[in-house]
Image (cartoon, rainbow, N blue to C red; front, side, top):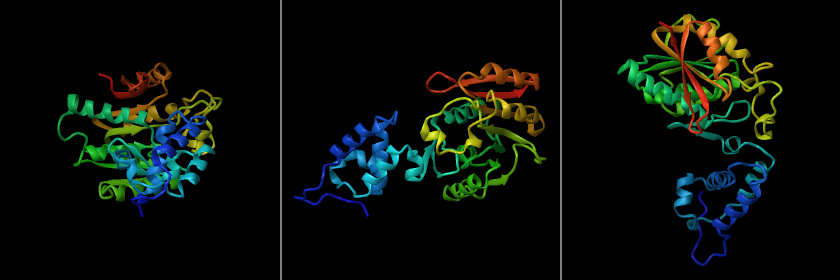
Length: 289
């Protein structure tokens, strides 16, 4: 039930409490105000936009302090509230699954541009998402192409449970299949579009506690140089791509040259897509002429 202020009540002011929470969260978060607003909206059982439209309507719920305490202990906001919005879809997430990042939306943008400029209407008919996590890239892409179907593959049964749940919640269960697997091993079909956000962090790299202490290491780290999974993935893409197909892979901001070289050695032409911060974020691979 939403807490609303009654006329003449002595409830604490939501604006003041949000300000105080954001001040405290600034010590551990790059987005303290956003964190506080998301936690407050969750505690109230409303959308953040509803909260911001008129915060004076609401009384501060008793549960808010506990949510802030969890965030101060470096638990990710997405785990606390149980979901993360990505592209145009809302994905349920929790411990054991990689949290979708806004940077990964760069891959969806690259796919949409490629489809419009190079392939036109009706493409892609089939989509493969390798390392799908909670269904992030597959479900976002299927939401854009209503006539497409897709397969999401992940080595984690926990992630696949979230992916199936998300597909059902979004009304996409009839178009999205999920399967446990090790990248493309055992797959015999070909796909118009292959999406992948593989682990690409070097084992020696230090991460923020929010990530290192909570999100699954197997979805983050990829060997000494962060390229271990690209070395496995890229040579296998040609057999999985249908004629006229394309693969779009997420990369780290400093990895374009190395990943691009691996792709060119495997017979692909490489195009790079930058994220909103101007950093190299995705490579679009098509068979070289």
